[in-house]
Image 1 (cartoon, helix red, strand yellow):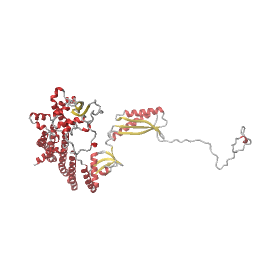
Image 2: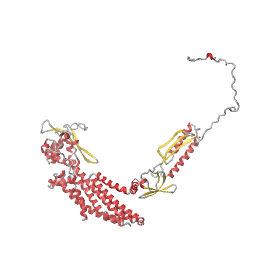
Image 3: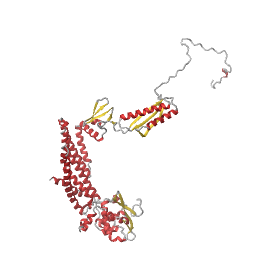
Image 4: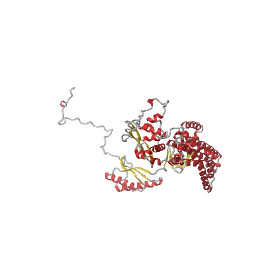
Length: 583
């Protein structure tokens, strides 16, 4: 019974393709616009108004000819379809076969968007190609290379003065090579040799009848081989795990056995899928279903593994000594299984193309109600998850958190503990910690030396240049210096010194190494200053004293100046002084 349950997903996987390929197959065109196809297609009574259909398609356009060829190919009219191939005279007898092979190639590699094919008689004149040449597709030929499929405009031999488009001679010459690389070429030739040509006819949704028969058979084969490989894998792992002293690995192997069998079945189905030679659209849909199956296998195995993990954790000595801890772990394991199951459903639906936005919105409402009931606990729990995912620091790192620095001692589910430089312990809840500014010094790949050195104001121009060159030489000669960025510049005239700005980086991992490098460089700076004949400045103030004549005593009256008895020589008289016009 259990084996039948494992077979069911593979059978459903192949049969679900019926629902997935309801759209037309890749190279299957809508009714043709050419004269031959127009007679075979019935008018659509539910079509949209003409003004909403887009540009009119000319009967002698590349789009009309391509649609006519695809429609005739869909009906199996290979002799008529060969009209749209420019076949050399020596291969005229093979024209229907070439038309059939080209259709098989297009079915496998091309999905035509007819809106991209020119509806004009002269084709697209802005595609950079020669006049009367149109590129309609490209075929992959390996090593990420492609070869173009061209159509050319040529006179219609049946209607004088009219034209139509046909696949070029170069394209026709490549058909055999493209056909030989088809993954299902061998089955096509075998069916023809065995007289089973009806199986090469089109079935529902553009797939061949042999492909419809092969899919369930492939599912059965994948299930049988997956079951056998699953047993072999478990037997090998059981022998390996028997050499270990622990028991949890044996229990884990027993729990993941069924998912392992299904995983092997999906792998075999995936490996054999290219041999079916499905249309590109059907292949894409089936690969999406396989991706959904892979997601289901992963989350199924993870869901079953959580039981083993919970048993292993709850039997640890530190958990057995605390009943509350065991209860919390049990509740956490159940919640984790629920989360895994929910994520698995969402992943499977997303893999098959189902819009999961509405489902996620519903889950969000439930999560919101749960968060209101246990806000702080959930906040700290998700804070722990955030710290575990981002890993801003690890145990033993020297970090800075907001207004203190210290060493990380323990990262728990609820809080994280730090040992400060004063040897005190600070504990911060993880929910609060995940929102704070965290700076870790352990992650630095180099450490920066940034300082300003002041020289006394008696330093000359030549001494300043000598000191700057000496400082730069000391830095570059150091074995730990990072040479890509270094600053040694005369900065400014300070209040009491001529300031030189120093900035450099040392490629050292620890603070102790940086201190040693810094000391070596600073000692070198002292030697440079001494050799230059100048000195380091220190804060000083200069007091200027002036020796002025003593002022007269405050109590002694100041005698008035004597009145002049006569004006000095060459002094102008009052009547000689100029007056304004208003006086």
